[in-house]
Image 1 (spheres, rainbow, N blue to C red):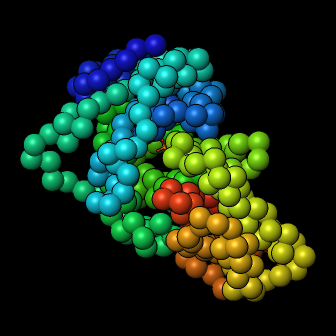
Image 2 (spheres, protein in one colour):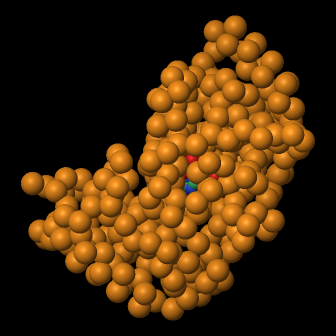
Length: 283
Ligand code: AMP
């Protein structure tokens, strides 16, 4: 496995791979890798002949009062894990390498960024779109793999790739969960033992919503209220949002008429967790 830290070297390597006829699959991450990330890498391996994983904690996607400084990092552990699933190249740039002095460009996806996490994290998706655009130009992938755990991020990147004719296939991978249902996340490390138990309530809320819909409930407000009661009944929780939305436009819906995204963002203690499911709605 090769480790590359410079943008230019990564571009030259990607170009050489392309000339040699390889297909390049890119998996962008912020590191502190877990089984969810590794699943993305396995999918990339199946679809591409060379897999590049980027590890970069991107400052521009964190808000001023968010956890950029204390975001967990584990370079050696990450390299071991990436190697264990057969990754070919790890791209590990520094912040000055990605954002040299004078940097002043921003990629903005307009509409799908306005809902869900975009409300409480207004600059987040500009940071994501900009860094992913850079990674696409650096690693020159034919396809890029993202997790459905960050459903809105996947939507934003798919929109950007289509709108700007990037010729990169965007592949989404289902959420990988802990045995008790909690969606895997690098941020789960922040949870105390008590908070970790409480954190199960996100998945329980999603399951409850699916049960209600299966039993015939179609009133979005009623579904939301029930999930809200379940989550706010748990200690340490503070709800950022509970949304029912169109899975394509991410616009909020009030009546469930077709398959509907339920997306949650909940603080457990100081840790903001997200989770989602597409609720099956039968006519
Ligand atoms: P992150 O390192 O948190 O920025 O995540 C990097 C990529 O891994 C993103 O595409 C995430 O959606 C994906 N990812 C993170 N956690 C999971 C999970 N539990 N299941 C599937 N994909 C995940």
